[in-house]
Amino acid sequence: MITSNSCSLDVPYFHGYVETTMDALQLIYAARQGIIPRITRRLNHTERGVMIKSGAVFIFSVKESGIR
Image (cartoon, rainbow, N blue to C red; front, side, top):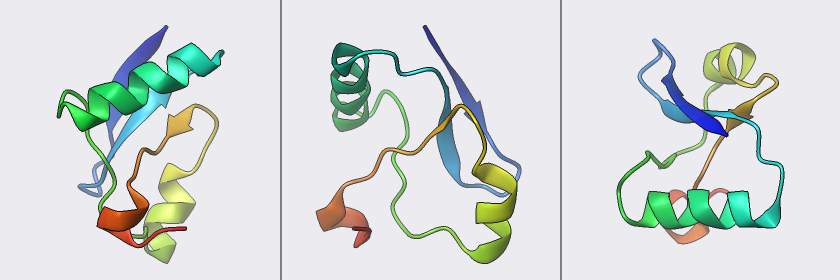
């Protein structure tokens, strides 16, 4: 289903395919448990250009990161 990956820019993200709502809920649960990383801040311009691509999954908390 989903495999983990990190970019050399030191911002953790997940790489995979989220097919169902259950897949998304499992990712949220894993992030809350600390099993997979969460984004804690906005990506800068360079990071966005390199990291935002097909299969990149970013999990964040609005309260923690300020991202909306």
